[in-house]
Image 1 (cartoon, rainbow, N blue to C red):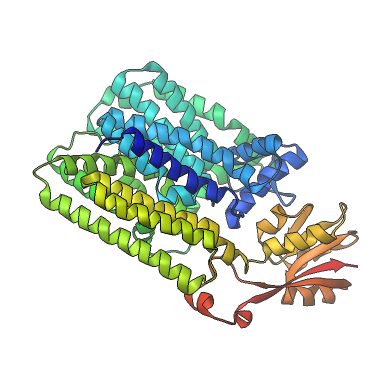
Image 2 (tube, one colour; image 1 turned 45 degrees about the vertical axis):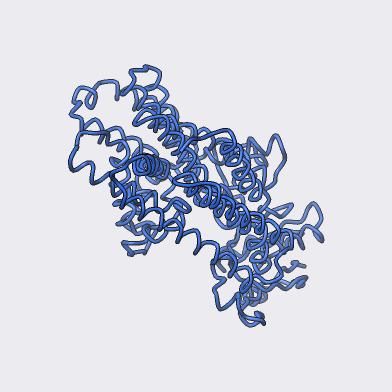
Length: 537
């Protein structure tokens, strides 16, 4: 497999097509919440004391929100302005994946690993539906690369930069940002019995350096929540999610296995094969590098036993998984002694591509009829390219091109056709649009019982989320208040003596709640919740 000029140009064009198509997809759920927090930094001018809908915010450290706010100050407040800097920052993580693969193995492995990481469906998806884990993955792999330069290539700056990026990882996600590079480097040093490096006094400097870097986050938490904020940062938010004492009820031990099937696509087969073959190789040569498996295995165990589970939690270790996938992909396809493994991977990838294309076409025809004709032309072009790649290429090159073409076609289809149609039933954007059209500059949009942060982010003047009936009193004496609520909420407003006018009624179904039955139904009216936009009079 050679990364010649034509291959690189083609890969870059498909990467840009996938990423750009997601820039203008509306933000939902947590991504909208994070974008709103960034907006409030601009609105209230406080970069330390974070808020969401005017209420103090505790759950995540500030780096992602700082990045979003900095972008807003340059480009104005919009979804694409929130996404763009994260996408650009992640390119540093792609480069770090290449460099680390080169240090641990060779340049060919590094290049393919970077290619794998930058073209994962998980990478594309979580640069559209942005989480703090998106930035965590970049900071973690940057830290591991720099520490590897120090311990493998004796570059002194590598240690200091490793400390710096570990600090940024903690500034992004909390203590888990320390766990990932610490496992990678610590287990590797332990496996190689490098006791002097493992217990060197330089780590005391690292603790101090990391403490300085995360101090703004700690200061903001202490300002707003006192000692409880610091306890939350260092203990509750991470350990509480593992034990379930803070959040989480998921007991499925295979959750990350079946979620990785699509998160790792289209390189799922290479990834699984890489992990299995690496484990086998460690049995015969246990003192080879443990930077990859040293964090992948324990991190997956921690995630699997944790009561709080989410697919984006995998992001932090995916660049390392891609390094193993790359290492073994090149070894298997360059070897003459691994014929059976090569055939198994090849056949599995062909099956994966076939199922992927069939799923995409069936989904559009059965569940999303009326797809834009431009999307059909794009899919036709990709299908023609698939046929040409089968004819003109062979071996690993053919598989890479087939899988990349399918992945790009799928994610572009999701961004340009599937998601817009699903958004039609997610009322938060329509609510914000209706509010922006009717409300004056002094009016504020409140949300009672309905915690959809996108309604605030897309509204021109957000108020506060009112989670319970006890808090309805905050509307007393407020002029120019609008409320987004449900049928029960209307009754409670009336019971508390509020006079209101219903200006709009919306049928609502969350994105994740749009089941096969719902999508196939011709008449969806009985399957939609009724939400309302009312003006308090």
